[in-house]
Image 1 (spheres, one colour):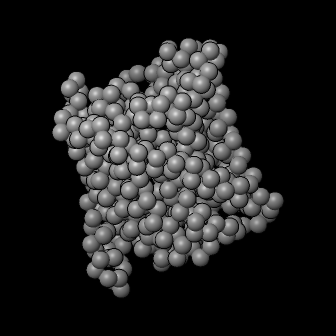
Image 2 (cartoon, rainbow, N blue to C red):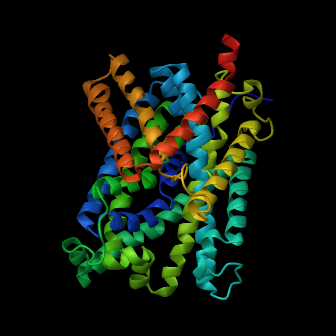
Length: 464
């Protein structure tokens, strides 16, 4: 067994990791969510996208500065260790390896399956489904569950057995998913200006929509899922060629690409359908209005491919989490999780752990969020609620960076980190105001998982 991962990814692949992991299903279905939460107020929705993007960019730029100074095996864990300390870094790594990455990965596996079935049943309405489509067969049917597990195992297999193929797959899906987004941004803009739909959407809210309480906070919270994932790219910093230069470049360039694509796509969609139509039917109606039924259905295929690319990127980060802790002598059985397979040059035990935890989170996601057979306490959105803790855990890192890095310029040491702290606090507040009591149930689960992490930590037992 070897104990080091080889440097196999260049700058272009790293950029595709950032863009491809972030741009997934969120941009397609969160546009509808944001319009719903704002009552069809298009300018308020654009403001939410801008605020969410600005928060991401402030955090991303600050971490890019850290990436130029600190490098070990897992970016965000390295930064936490260098600024706050090894214990804090351990809990950060344990959290992203047991809650954050697996929870998002499980949801993206399901979304990949869902949109694959939506495409198949739209092309072939007579496709046999155990649960009819109109009764939610593409959401909770056995075919959807089987496809979800298939995508989960396929993402694991690709990353665990052939990381180079996983990198090429990430690059390919990133390019593919940008096609419909760019097409809608450009064509939708001109179509909307010519038809007058775009101007009307900016002037008048949807007639039948009712905004929720604190619509801006709720809308920004919805953008968080669409913008999340960029931090995963830092988990492969030890596998990026010339990481201290290329990882910061990938984060910065990828961040600007993401924000531009999201905002222009959102405006383009508004040119293809009225606000009320978008609230009622989602982005598909805009594609159908502009490009016709055939191309409108093809959108579902692009969404499925987009979700697959994001799933691959999330699993990529998942597979390396326990390895990054084990390399520090932390977590359960470091001698097992730090092993790197000679044939695949991947941490096999860490990858298997990632698959198992992702499956556990999918079981929870299915019963509590999809089938809704679990009710009462401890029911929460496992795709959005973890942003409370991830952004809270960023704040001490930013503060310690400002305190310790005395040789940095004012912009790098104070201005951008302060913006990142403010943005992180805003995101936490938006999530609390949006999800209310569900936040408490999530925080209880978070506390239990963190307590388990403390109990199984090898470094704590060694010191004792």
